[in-house]
Amino acid sequence: MICIPNANLPVVLGLTMVKAFAPGKCILFGEHAVVYGHPAVAVAIDSGVEVELIESDAWTIEGMPFQSEKHPHLSHILEDVFNYDGKPLEISINSDLFSAAGLGSSAALSNAMGAAVQKLLDSDCELDVIELAKIGHAAEAKAQLGRASPTDTATSAMGGCIVVSGQKVSGTRHVFDSSLVTPEGMRKWSICEVELPDNLDAWLVLGFTGIGSPTGDMVAGVAKLLNDDPSKHKEMDAISKITYAGLAALGAGNLEAVGMAMNTCHEKLQLLEVSSRELDALVEAVLPHSLGAKLTGAGGGGCMVALTEQPQRVAEAIEVAGGTPLISRLGAKGVRIV
Image 1: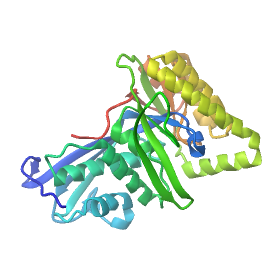
Image 2: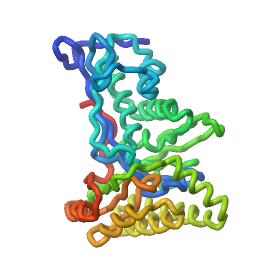
Image 3: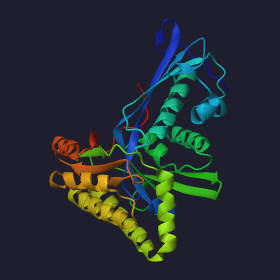
Image 4: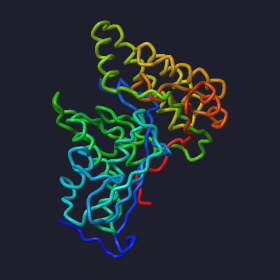
């Protein structure tokens, strides 16, 4: 059923307007191992993507004509999910995330778009973040030719600390299950959340290498490494154990143990050959001022992340080492109307 906008939304020059924001994410533990059924732990960060929709006389995005085939995830949300048949929309996007850096910018865009369209059609609605996570995941699958993990969209929609695995993870709160028919067959995930203690006095500082992170190439490289050297599977098992230890430390508020787990996880990812000279240099530069640090995401480029009580010192160290810093709280809020 199509909902009709009402007078509760802001009006710009007589036209209805709505803004929504969705955060990016970084992975604390479990990258690459999650591909093989082990859990991954992700947290929402303060930076993200804002989408503004204004009713207009023509469909535009960032001042250019909107073409559905060039924006399949946004088209899926408008046409397949909400069956939008209202006035044309002027779509504006503002992101303060590094591009192609493994911070979930595409998922944040999908979530922000879903929230904005939902609010535009029903200004009295309360956002259902779980439903938006599912919508965002479907939109990402549409854009990625049927391949997409729910990690980025769930973390961006729900905020906080999210665990994604092939099964429910003990010590967490199960929220929902997700499935997707991929070109390789049916994939299923369990999405859980970890309640972080309120008194955590620590920050995340991300360091961007300036090099894009080629996720597909890195995943394929790990698959080839495991095929050529099956003994490397032990590193996957080790990352899984580190992830569970890191989860327990997070839930208990033991930041020193979280940092130790991050350091060990980075060492294992190095053994899987997914780190790089640039990532290792940033990690090494921040360790004197951090509880722990590691690459985050697929590797090969993109970002590293440090857990620290001295965010400015760490940000300065990243800059001196040639990276670009981004400071965030540990577990930001999820998608919202702004």
